[in-house]
Image (cartoon, rainbow over all chains, first blue to last red):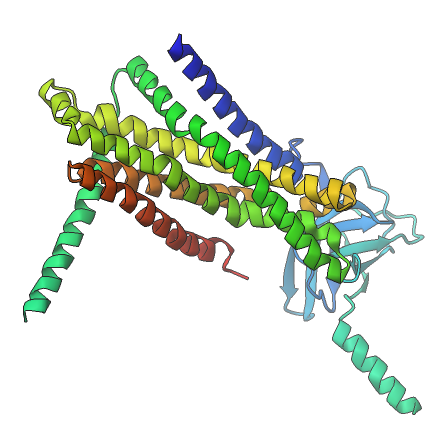
Length: 153
Length: 260
């Protein structure tokens, strides 16, 4: 009888540990068990990626539609080459859309925002977004502001 | 000259005891109980005394540490107007650092010391040698189930610690301090990654569990079989175990999160 109770307690302890693990995985890290979503890859070259990291989100109208797969350096053009995975459901992005590196909030994370163009052709797997806008670097902004006010004064 | 000789002797002694501990670990893992049903019964009894009985202290301290973290984090983050980030702070510090280390320290004090005292007392009352007389290997019957139980229990306890810590922090920051709960969760989920944060913390605590349980059972097995000897061995388990955890934690953290 005593033994049965011990086994019961041990069983519930182990189940509790597993539940804690699942809770951490799903609720805290936001892990989805749906597996890899169907995506297609789009590249874009930026003059300055300014602290963008891989796995950063890609958004249209503020809604996440994909993530940054990798960031490499383009040796020929001296630019940052960003490869993005975009959800296959969102297959209707015109080819002349523009990509900008934005910041959520004043000190938040960097992400890529895509503004929709007007072309009839859509982006496909492997195509490139040519119209890009680099990250705002605070130092550049401040120095521009300072020199400009110098000229005026 | 004499001091140098003494130092050398001390060093050799120490080296010998490290070697003994290593052989001891290898032997007790290799000589797992053979009969499956019997070994499961022994293991379950140990899981109960090592794991289930440590549950209360782990849950209570997890909840309080989560609450304190939320309170402290909130008061600092509120100065920068980003009090929603308290969830991120809570989850990252718990998963990466606090849960593995604090749980392992509590485990060394709660379960490690009792393992050492129990095995030491068995040695002092000659239960270990009488097992040997009966042809039962004490490493197999006494040490192996305790060692395995410790290695299984500590990671589970650490996961429970993280979960209760986050719930405790949630209660304080959302219900008491009025942080918006949607922002709390979304910032947390954005910044916590399953493989880098949860799995690295888990790997850490598995390493700690092996080291702490190893020290505990070895100190018990090798103690001087007197009441004073058992007391010293128990103290050594807690002291050596805690130091080993903290030192190992630094090395593991540097290896896992050191590349910026």
